Length: 105
Image (cartoon, rainbow, N blue to C red; front, side):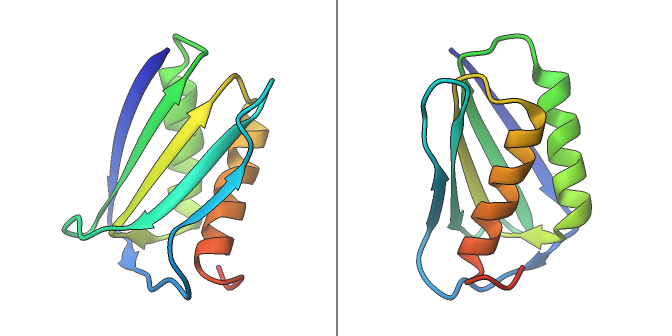
């Protein structure tokens, strides 16, 4: 397993309509994403635990695209991955934020 941590800033704090949100299932070729509010001084922290080693540059590119589309702050995003494709990662991130915001991303 490889652990990757990324930080992003420049977004706006968001208010959840409910508690933390989790989407996806850890299973063959998939992942789960947990979004939690946390006072991080305007940053977002993404922590990834993945079975697919050596893909840090791809993870960074997918996350940069996500944060370009979603200007967020003060969130911790935890990802447990067993080899999901970048398209699935992007989809799950979008779903998790939508769920966290109560369907209004």
